[in-house]
Length: 305
Image (cartoon, rainbow, N blue to C red; front, side, top):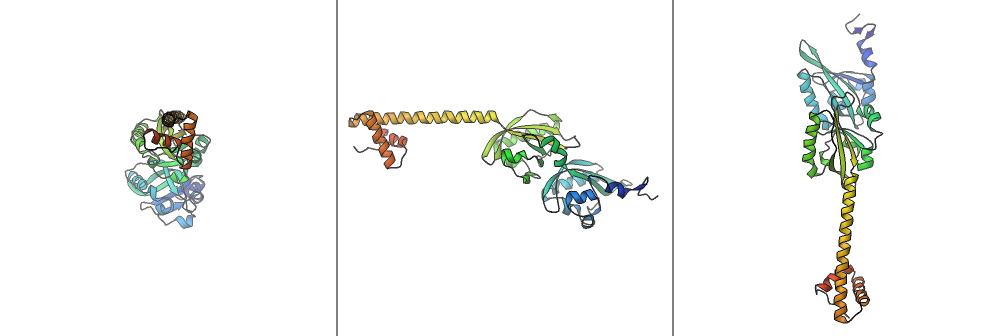
């Protein structure tokens, strides 16, 4: 039996049977092994992949810096696992749950083996039936997964995967969220919801953001952010708008009554006749009646008899 045999099976047969993508590279990142699941997940055949740099095949531009950090950890002897935006052969980016481990000989890193699966598939039973918009964030606020509800609630596209959530937050909310993220990353589990303004198709809207630290969960490896429209804030803003509209209407009524009284006294008119004069002038000159009334009261306008 060769060194590559395990019982009656070869190592290649065992790795090839895995449902998760298994990719092995040398220390320079050149692919030396690419199983069938990797072909299915990334779209490249083993013949196309072997010998090429793995970053050319699977790592989008937004993930290059993180890939460098992973290599540094592996050289230090540390296994890395977490959510990571990756790219298919057709160029589409999707969230993957990746575990990378070093292969060492006599303490020297000689290769890397990575196991990956579609994070969306892993999270779908947990998050995709929720009416909330569900995101999974790295500790640096980069989105590694977005549920379908993000489009329904906020109009966000799938392309937010692999990008920072910060540009989607109102500038006034960013410092608070940065502090909140620091607290969440430091403490596993659920945290109280935070009200923030986020960018939607309709502009800035208030949302409740509930963050849960699941960095240690093997199926998540990230911070789950559940977003929903803030009904309390929306009701408050609607009430404020209604009050403002009522105040405006009251002010208009007052200025119109003042103008009617001025015209009635000056030209010996009945109140209804004074109002008709205001309305006729506003229609003939395409002005709102409140503006005509204001000009009459301030003596900017002398309505003809």
